[in-house]
Length: 181
Image (tube, rainbow, N blue to C red; front, top):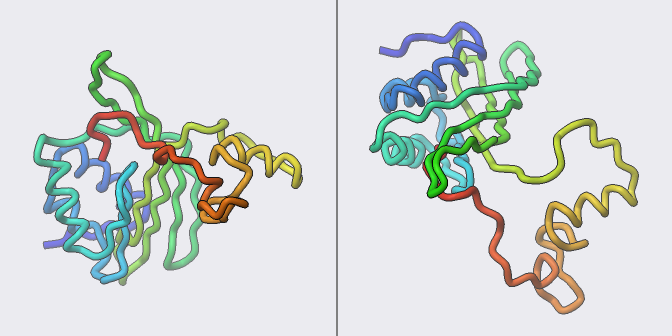
């Protein structure tokens, strides 16, 4: 039976508790019963629907839970929707020992009756400038775009030679090796 979360914050706490415990059934009880639910794990593809999301968490939890510390919550709420932007700090084991990977996360919750459910979990590694107030004008925006994408072209825009994203042959940046989530 589903244990209802009376607030979006309670649903988020239950999400991270299920992550830490490696509790697949507890995790899946938190998601909305909607074919449009979406989950993006750091560096992974967009997963749509309960089946795809369940399979991804089954794989993640196959080696146990994932301990994540959260910080810097920014929240927007209406009567039936809550959007949380936060930082996850995930400890991973690499060749050089333990390291902390910071992941930028957006969690979207919807109220269904008296309970709050997860509609979207989007997590991605960001290795650009700090997310302090980036008050940019057009010249600064082009400079920031260059530092993020490695080219003066927005993602998907074709360069003069016809290649997308400035014709770079490099792969997109991915999180370092290790189990994130």
